Image (cartoon, rainbow, N blue to C red; front, side, top):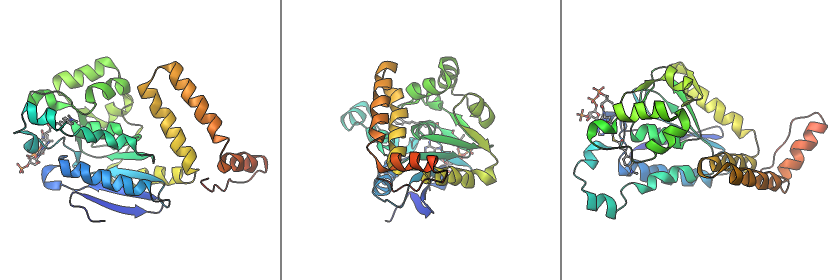
Length: 257
Ligand code: DAK
């Protein structure tokens, strides 16, 4: 499939998607999201691929939504077209997405990283929600997801001052799961993806769905969902194989059924 703004390649069982607008520091325009959506849908349908790594360049994961594209937008146009509402679609795909962040992840870039399932960062990563400096506020989940990731005080400080957070602070604040040297970033993200690829794909999808439900529901509803999904794993061949393999002291051979 041909794309203009992203590169897609398969590395073993992991698809590597690279946002590729280097001259604009990977600013996210409408085409990036259309292409990302097409690529993620194709990956969902590809049984050979078990996980996705989403990355940018060494200088920028993404420096935000494309300000030049947004500059002339007025309220009616933004509201009537529900401008970039489809960004959310990134969270609807079943295969785990690992964001490998180097350089700037600002505004929509930080929001895109937070839409992914796992975020790992290079030592030079900088996270921020600088919309306040543009006279606007986060529009793709920044004010909602950031508070769940790093808590109210830190989220408020980032959103109200527009100040950036470095990789070390992002790890301490739980915005990222780990920080690695820049030169190891992609290998480390692919390693996580390939580790996930050893598991049963439907069970991974159920686990991802269960964790994400915690974002959207009360604890009681979340626990109910988790229990139902747990029972559902008992309808799969892979659950039987996993437990049989354990009792036979061998590695499981999952059939993804
Ligand atoms: N948009 C468009 N172009 C950008 C850009 C952006 N966000 N960020 C950088 N660029 C372009 C620059 O204009 C420049 O292009 P030329 O002038 O060379 O043509 C090129 O990338 C290199 O940038 P700089 O020369 O500025 O590079 P520096 O190293 O000096 O500075 C920087 C790097 C990242 C600190 C700086 O570029 C910067 O402050 N960029 C803007 C960061 C920002 O404010 N990001 C937040 C954007 S607002 C929504 C969903 C999402 C959003 C809203 C609604 N809905 C679902 C409703 C999101 C909003 C945002 O993200």
